[in-house]
Length: 154
Image 1 (cartoon, rainbow, N blue to C red):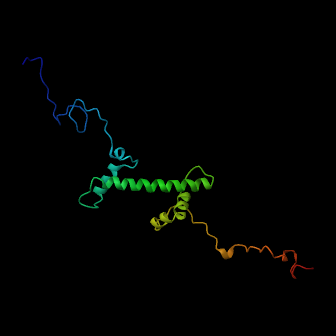
Image 2: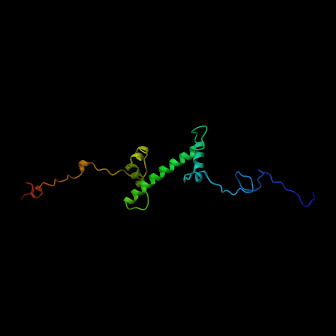
Image 3: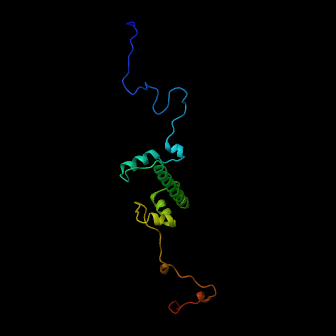
């Protein structure tokens, strides 16, 4: 060994800057994909898995459990947003506000039972007028509307 060519050895994992993850060097050109991408979901599967581990829901968490939970949460969110968007459109608004979310929940039977104990801030209450307070409808065959009552005659 000559004195000019001295080898330097990096301490560390031994990968020497070839990227992270599994694989054996040359020929491995696959892109890294998240579990959410592999499952075709928008919700973060890895984050939900971490919450399940750290939450103390069980000693062991299966591999499919966070994927299933993420898909259920994504479905419920999509359903609620669709109904809230329809409520916003009915009120001629472009943005969904808490009132639209509350109207969507209260007008859907299944969401109402699921979220029965939930209070949404700044949402108001459901519009409800008691039938007794509504003006009485006149009958079609009654021609007495032209007659004046005794209190109105002069």
